[in-house]
Structures are given as C-alpha cells and as structure tokens.
Length: 201
Image (cartoon, rainbow, N blue to C red; front, side, top):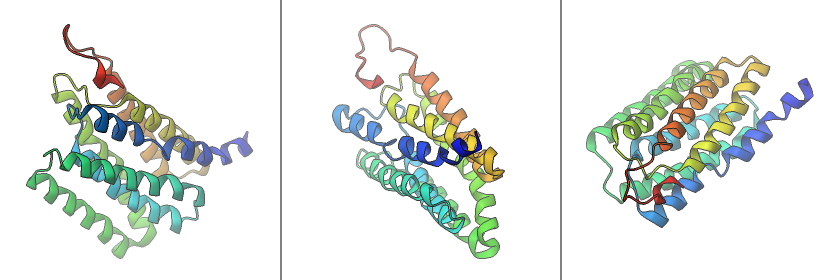
C-alpha cells in the first residue's frame, strides 16, 4: 500500500498536465465566458509558478511537470479572457499584491515561509472562480472537463500529502477538491428552455 502511495504524484501529473486544456478549447470554440473568472486563471498561473519553486526546493521532482503545465496553460487562459475584456484594475492590483506576498514569504522565511503562504494559496486562487460561478445566472462558459481533472489531481495530492505528512499539500488538496466539487455542482444546473447546452462541455 505504501509503495502505491509513492506513485500518487504520477497519477496527479496525469490529471494535472492537461487540466486547463478543456477550458481553453471550450472558450475558443464557443467564445462563452459566462461564469469564468479572469482572476482565477491568473492566480492559478501565479500560484503554480510558486508551487514549482516549492516542489523543486522540496525535491518533489514529479510535481514539476504538472505545476509548470498548469502555470503555462492557466496563463494562456488568462490572456484569452483578458482579450475578452474581463480584466479590472482592482483585480490586477490584488494579484500584484498577492505575488508580492509570495516573493516576500520566501525571501523572509525560506522554504517554510513560502510553503506556509502556499497552504493558503489555494483558497485565494479558487475563491474568484466560485464567486463568479455562483453569481452568474447561467454559467455556461465553465468547462466540466477542467474541473473534473482538477478534482482528480487534487484528490491525489491530498492522499500523497497525508502519506508524506505534508500539511501544505494536504491544505492544497482539500481546498482544491472542495472547490472542484462546488464548481462541478454549479454546472449541473441546466439553463432554462430555449437556451443551448453548448456551455456545458
């Protein structure tokens, strides 16, 4: 059993590497942005870049691929959403402040400092997505595929964090699993009669 748990990062990588592709493809195909959050995509890119540093310094080599893929693909999604006018000055300032917190946490506290802040990063990251999804009457732009993959990846990291007794990975995993479940639940609400179902891919 313990040997099986050691391979969980590989399973997490299988879920994590392509997880933002369904949302990118859906946005390109439908141009539907209803319920999709630009701050979420941008924070996901920033936080995964920070996680890349944390994983590298912690010698979690398997985790480098999904974290770098998530950072690049979420960044791509953020650019696509920005091109559709979803950027606000307030959101930009808030994200810049958060990036400063991440850099400062490592400069002051090293790996432990960065890891402590990253334990809360997932909450910061997913809050805009949940807020936007639940404030949008018909969030047809949300990709179920992306959030299903997020659920799978973070379930693996939760179990691996428990296995390695890493509270930061546990916090990341539990928060991400909860957020993914909420987002998937939100997409189950069908639009009223007469509206298409193209936004539920």
